[in-house]
Length: 195
Image 1 (tube, rainbow, N blue to C red):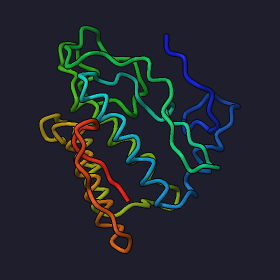
Image 2: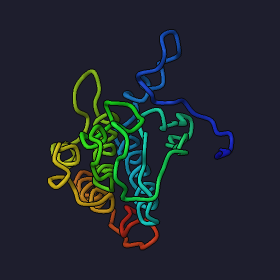
Image 3: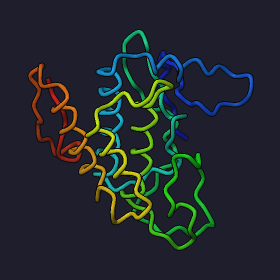
């Protein structure tokens, strides 16, 4: 069992049960694009650190995203189903939100590894940058998310760290008016974006 500290925020799960509050995802779509990019970067940093110690996410989806609108800060919750990886799927499917699950998560005997997590993180990028008015990111950011969600694991970014580097390059390119640089760091998979 994991015990999390109490933090302020709203869950960004769009597929909540009937009658529950869905204002969080709708409100997040009005956040400045820079805050959304920072939130995505934070999610990728966390998963690069998790992958660096040999764990694979199972059941990561928008229900794990808690956003504090007052502080413009993304927090991750409900991360209790991570396994040492890679591993072979011994069931007919893994637990999880089907819209965030890679095709291999529905195939008994498939290898579940970082490329599987790359898929769910690509879906997260799509979820956070998409809105009723259309895509809020750059074409390069769309390309990163599309590659992350290719059906064939071999065609995706080969690791969470590589996805993070590709994402950081798009953030750097889209914020040329501010001075930003990529700073190497071994603790987070070898990358992070720093002011």
